Length: 376
Image (cartoon, rainbow, N blue to C red; front, side):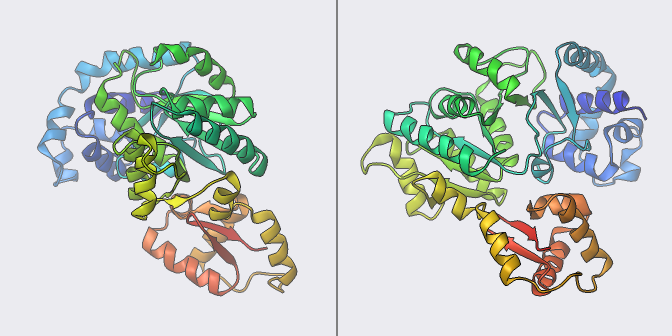
């Protein structure tokens, strides 16, 4: 199986699974690759007896959609777009663990989709001067407190575009998640910002070219915004809105959710205030609040831990599975539980128990946001 063959087959399945994504993702995880699914599509019931009739019916159209998939990959190749499959190493590890992760992503940009720290900033399309000022100060301060952080949003009017613009102004990489293919841009007024983002961040979508920015696609893209991030920050929102959808998905994905409060009675603060009141989000008023809540101000904490320290030169005797965890954290420290699970191939339940044991041994330390730090 060549890399191109797998990309092509994944593109075919992406085209076929628009209305049956979760079922196709489950099948993909079980079979191990798109190529395996397509090669065995006629006898899949013998391999996976519980496969749904809808998926079997969709797989009957493989050859019909193959030319469209070939055309897509040719377009991507000629326009500097990376087609990233679910099994690829550069697929966002945070998103990979989500049950409805896209089989394929299309990406144009420079930012690392697996950067150490990624957050999303979302909110109303009708940002007020109050909300814009919050973002201006928050992003500027965040860039200084957390060098290398990546800011994600949806490139929409209001809070989204404000977050992208201030990230660019402060040298912070920023990624826009789109509700259509990379051959177009909606809204077109944001094209200049998008062009800058490709050089200092990127544009990301699950949709092939010639896909319209339909209403349903905006809802679907919100799960990617939530899934690739460590935390969600809601700046302004009415009682209902896309930002609240992203906060709900973030909670479902066990991400941390924060919200800036606003004036009582203000239309575009109502959603934030209610979310905080109902314990759906932690209240923050500054980047400093956020960084402390996420325990990302860890340099001083780690130094103090070393001084007070674990007085040892070697780790205590570890089991093979514990050693797997330690080796992963040695390569990249401060990882979330879901990412450690991906890199060690250990189930979440088993991993939680092992991490608790390592904490008791003084090997790792848990931080807010589901992050684990290797003490060494």
